[in-house]
Image (cartoon, rainbow over all chains, first blue to last red; front, side, top):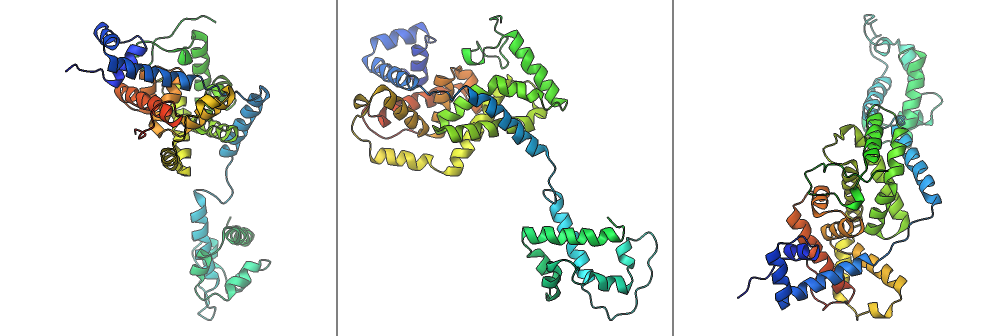
Length: 175
Length: 207
């Protein structure tokens, strides 16, 4: 029984890159010659399928699109990406503090090295209730588990919440 | 431009037409790459201009429609830009870019989960030989559709080999496989193409 040529060797024969022995075999063996003719026909079929290029005007527009996409990728995101979870966590902590019952002993003045919000007087705590100017505060006012409520906020609500928080903390010079 | 062929970047025996580069092309790429790596975003535009046609054509052969092809080509360039800091020149820039584009196309196809279903449908209804009845333009469309339905590795191999005229070694480098695998995939691809188009005895599509 003759050893027929492997597929890869047949391709080499088609491309003229096979050994003399393999090329001779392909010429003498009807089976290998048939397989080679099929492969050649398939390659020719594929190569014959023209694909039209888009209009010449397309390429300038395409380059602008790529440049815009790169520009957009490079722009920093507001409240997005890496800082979003940290911001939300901070907001949740501050919200829990803001909604703590206010009937305990008066807060003791904290050392100057602590953050400003940790030594807020009771009056300022009350001012944070419901975050005046934000409908979000009203929603949270009736929430028993504030942390869970904050975690359940939609993206839009989270942004509004964060902005209200920043505004309030900004007043005290903390941000 | 001189027609001098640069030394093959990965020990290839010879570079083919699609990645044959002149000294000035290679220098231009290298200068633009270095400028990008220094943070000059506008230098990337030079690279896009130089390679956009080949990358678009590659994507078009994959998806066979202009809208998806231009989106995929754009995505490939954005990925290339983001990764260009890691490009060390171990392979030609075009080879590296092809690799990104092929992966982008593979991910796109995978996300749509259509390749396998399309093949099954083709097998279920091989149809009569239709090529003879089609005009030249329709035939091209039919072939493009058939190419887009080939199993992924076969499709990638066929596109890079036939339409981008790369050597087996270059295709192997782009697809991360051996030369033997590339040749086997190409052989199966052309066989499957003929089966799908009814120009060969219909039978099982070989993976």
